[in-house]
Image 1 (cartoon, rainbow, N blue to C red):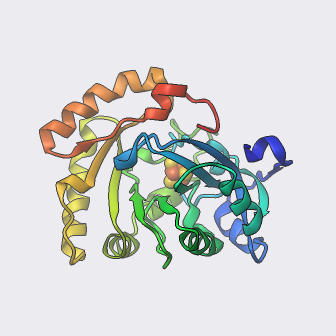
Image 2 (image 1 turned 90 degrees about the vertical axis):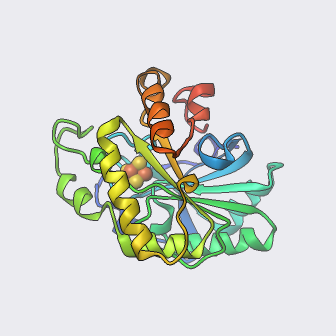
Image 3 (image 1 turned 45 degrees about the vertical axis):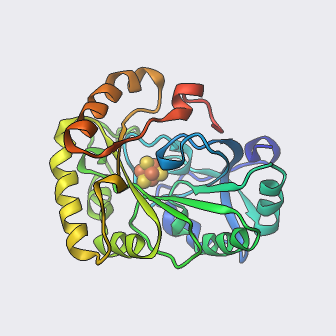
Length: 266
Ligand code: SF4
């Protein structure tokens, strides 16, 4: 049962939602944008039936964000942990994906992950890699945001350009990235538009390999084509597949887009 079908969503219009969402948190609740059952569409677990818990609020503003209503115009219902767990348990799935937005901006995400671990779920956390939290995470799916994600005035979906400087300042946090890689099984998932993204990926990997004292192999690196619609993916995926072969990284599809295009709760 999708949350958005069952609960009146509150709408936040102020753009500074990361800090606000943290401040207004109820003691044992999370701002939930969607909660639904689907197939994991991306990464090494693509195709695995999973329950998705999508929190609202993000500390970044990628121009291409495919969960616009968690970042640029966030909406959510506040659910306490028991409500979230009951909804998860109503589905016959062993895997839970905590995603956003940026789920790790919320302190209570760690409590949810503890409760899921107690119940024997496999947990994936999809994060932009700028925040570290100590929690039982089975797979940290870390997607560092490249310069090509920055909402320059010509690409800002709101046309205001107010997030360009802040996004550019905050999009890479090497300390958090290093701690995530050292602490958890991980995959590094880069959203790639074209070959111009590759030098930055190589530089970032070199810095991360210097900083982390655990191996970061090319198999841990996934290139994912930019595009939240079938039409856009048709323009990017072959280029990105070719880049994966050229550089020896993995390619990840966006299975949910292939199957359901940009429908919500997929
Ligand atoms: S980090 Fe993720 S959720 Fe946040 S704006 Fe970028 S794509 Fe959207």
